[in-house]
Length: 273
Length: 273
Image (cartoon, rainbow over all chains, first blue to last red; front, side, top):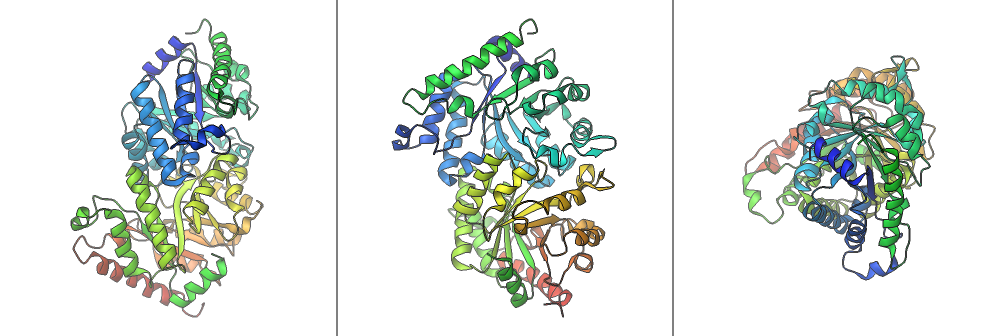
């Protein structure tokens, strides 16, 4: 999917919501556990109930790998379901991969070709040649960690290098990589005040923003400092939406939670797109 | 597996060789492609021919994920084959994972419980709470990237923070994490002169060393600066061993290459263990 299509979807739906499909079998409604593939059935119900309120879905790959072969099957079925029924949705494999060049090329193949995701998240620690194999794919997007939403972000990402925090050096350096137009960045909602400095460095890039909801970040603050003329934000909520209820009507509760965020977003983007 | 068992295996085999099982279907012997599960058959043949010469195997997970469900099946069969037939072998899931706490816990479950690997590689960028969920597992080992073998290592890992390169800060900081005794570190053979400084910071830790062979690192240099009284090294070779031949006799060629390295290692560790 091109960035242009993503922006037009944001405009159409008046939403820049991404829903995280982090499916934990201990947290989903009990009646689903009797079905053949509870993870996929849960995802399908959530997607059917929320697709008109969001522009992206983000399965976190850890939650599928934790269930081995069955988990991988559920992931394949989920992305196929999305691509078949809702091709206008931007899909994110939240995988946080990164390795030496020939290995990153294999990960890129796994997520962009075999699973046909629109984007994948990657970690920057191994540098340029660990990311460029992902950037080679036309109309695919590589979402690199910059400043994450967790407490551990302060261990290394904010250390001073060359007179600025490491995450700013990561952002600046990556702008010079080949096909860097295919980069987006992860910036945690819990670090909202850093968004204005980040926008100085990458004014036009899309930012994937986790940390609203369960992790405590504020949507209004993120928009105040992070929004650009194309919106430029995909704000993710996982647990706050998908686990809104454990009852038979879990999907409609999820839809209600998603709608609350969508309405807040429509308000915050009013007059921009 | 405890570190003590690993050390006693190194002593018994006079080898600290790790063989990387990075199986690319375009590089394995053509006659295997006719079989039901070429990746597993290739691994089985390599393992049977080399297990007495090495102490560890390291499947790089990217190479399995690139083949989707079939790849994941081959990975499961490979680790089960190793654990069943060669329980004395130290197994490494080369996955370079790392995410917020609840997600890292899912990756730890995937690799330590479901797949029953002895260890997994992780990336440090997200800090303490992204790594500690892995460290909770008793007799399992978490191998964190410090200074990698690729050119991109110079993008961020060697930037100066607090008067020293970032990778040294990563090493020092991680020593204070809970259950840090379960940490090992990745240090590339291509940066051999950095090993003495690394040994000042982590004198007792095991180092997983890629980059000998195809990437150009020197085994003798690695040992000169990196070996400790328990050897403390697992030196990996992947392509140089497993792709030594594309013929029917590929396994015996692999064995020959592994033996060359084992003999060199026996010589280099002579008098130490």
